[in-house]
Length: 95
Image 1 (cartoon, rainbow, N blue to C red):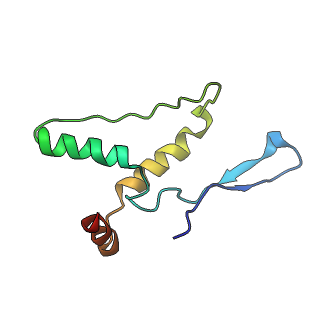
Image 2 (image 1 turned 60 degrees about the horizontal axis):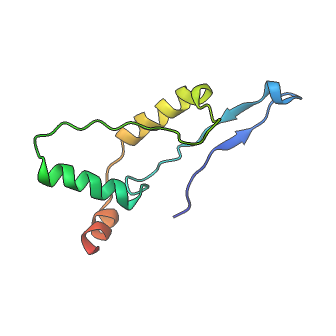
Image 3 (image 1 turned 90 degrees about the vertical axis):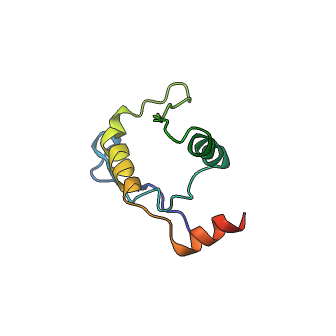
């Protein structure tokens, strides 16, 4: 399955005048890594009554994501609307 990505669309003549048109980056709940799955499984199985809070931290020095806060919030809102498909559930059942 191809992964959607940021699609830059430039308007105007200079870099100061460009804007970015976004497609959703996260299109599947499986678009994550094994570490996140295993840590969440520990929380669910070992601490079923626990309330967990997750936060994002950009660990790349000098990168300021503040200008993209609205787009990041849109991605998170979109993520909340996703559900596993039957194929994805079958895949998870097979591993």
